[in-house]
Length: 431
Image (tube, rainbow, N blue to C red; front, side):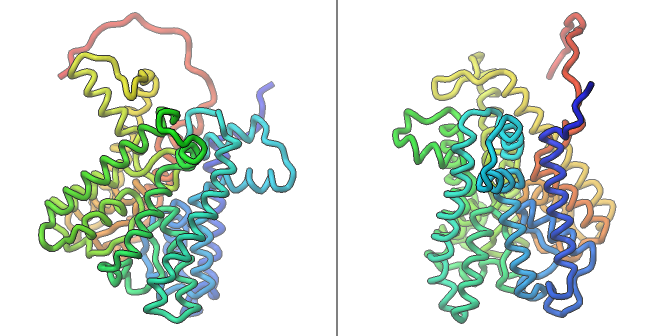
């Protein structure tokens, strides 16, 4: 008799759906709106999905159109989405005296998008402690900047919201007029605090936990070494390319901040719509790569990018696919290529639908929006509030798939193992 238990991947998907729908209902309440009318269904669903998927794309202005209650709801949705439905559920169960059994381990592994099951209990603790420490510290440090422009109560609220949005890599802000951090473009303190929160939030809880417990780099796992090395290279390369493409219109602070933020955070200290085509292309590549597995960010992930690069390098130089004196398994390589191809497919479909619907925007604006939605980045050239309802629904689906991962979405209905029967091999001409 077949088990009727819901498989871990399906539970993760259903959990996200339930939170998104609950958030939609709360945002539709008149008390959530500054005009006491409540948001319409599409805008509420879009905003809730963007928050739970820690994206930051917004068809409304949260700083002007949401009441204090609505902004609190938005912040809670970002927090739930960033931590992950499974992480919160398991932390609550453990707090209530529950056991960390095999079922919960499988659920947590799927929720954090990890390929191994070792040390999950430590990751659960890291998720809780790291989040509390970083967000409280971020709120306290951010307050010094926001208190210069807002009253004490308002500054505290903005600081807490900004810290949650930053660490969870969600580009929402409640400053009003779609400003993001444009008014703080020259504020080195706030830009570096925000960048620090974004970077650590994008590293992943496992990496942060391992760095804290194993002080010597040679003791770190291959996963941690890959994440850290790829992150550093992308930050440096992104900063240089941003400065190169935008020239004198970008300071080195602008270049660094946008290099950090484009990797799924979505904050902007400059007008994205005014950037050059070359600059937008750099942002799109960085958005597509995204953060790291087990983090609050999206994209195809830094590890996927690293494995693809090493595999191509090994083919060119006729060597084994190695890294840091370890050989990368072929099934990991195959998974990386699968994730890359599926991500391209999702972005292509999303862009195609948007092109059919939107005739007043350029292709680069539409393509940028589709990549931003999939990578759960939240950066936009300014077209999000003006999208049609069909386009908004398309972005909603794109954000949802991007947050959970195309591989998870494609395999949620898989119910049987691969057949053992095979055919004889025959080569096919390539290239």
